[in-house]
Length: 235
Length: 257
Image (tube, rainbow over all chains, first blue to last red; front, side):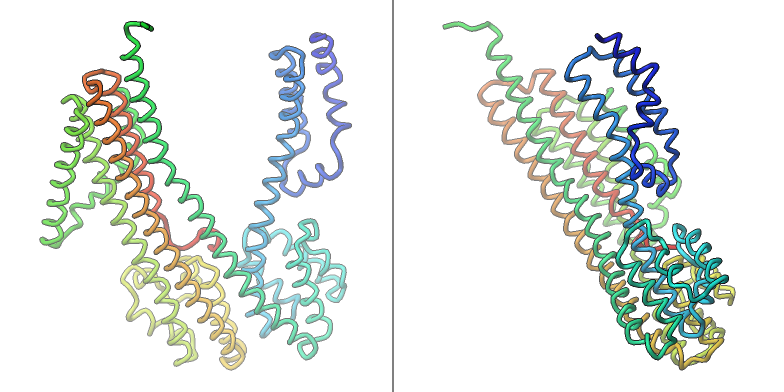
């Protein structure tokens, strides 16, 4: 059975792995700029090695499933980290836009902001700026900005920017002002979250002394017991 | 010997850094030097006493003494770096606030820069060239970038249009200072608590070994000597790593551009 399975993996592994990839996973890989073909190859090699090393039983199926799924978890983790970073970087960019909008139109402010924009946003901003040069009042260009991250804060801000660009300052200034207030609050919350994360990690250090004492105590007990039992059980 | 080598290997990079920086040489004040010398003696005596109460053999006692001295030197270096980082953060934040205040007064970038650089700390003064871009290189925080954008905007459309933003930015800088300082305070409190826990751990381990030593003399066993040596080595490593945490820039990396 094991060898049938190994032969199956060897010859049909690649096509099966390709069929099993869903569109959502492909989209996720594109988002974090990871080549799906590379993941497929790693999955194939891992499956082959696991099939060769482990006996064919339930445990092997379990290991195979974990090995298969771990790439998805890793990509998901990367996306979550990226989303978190982007959220903070978007707020930082909006902080800059707030100043630039005081004396520029929205497309010009966006173009000027590119020079000092956070790393992750530069390519998206370049695309946005290019698209706005062609059609500065197209709502879809604004609303589709970084749409793949499905971030409500980004979507909301882009709606306001479109409104500001289309209607002018008189209509949108109140909403934009509210947005800026929210953004400032958002930045503070982000900072608090980052600081809290650092502290939470540090609090785990508290377990080290207790762990060391427990191990030492157990070790001492072990030494005492082995010394007591030296002569063997005597009743 | 293996444990001792592992300990040295783990802390080697930090030790090399300490040797390069030589923090002792930087201490000019005689009183501070005296204070540090007394502290050093206290550490040596404490390590010897701990070794004695745990009935360690001379060989292990010497290893622990060397490791204790290394730990002490590293901790001194970490605390000096912590103070440096604290000073650096204070310099940066105060310089940014000063830029805001002078800009309100003079309403012109160049005059503001000149006025602010007069009472700026020497390391900032040295880097300032009168160009706004150098400021961003010097302080890569996003608030600094917003400040530069306000200066630029003011030059182009006049001060009145940017006054409101400048006020908002000043508020943001103050919140930034407050949040960072309160976080650092919490870090210090946690560090002190951790030291207390290490102390308590040492006390509990001593009570346990004393109790068992009275029942059955275990301190002469090689296994006991190795176990206690391992415990003390790992405790010292724990102390070093917890101290190393304080040696971080106060400005969050994620907030820098």
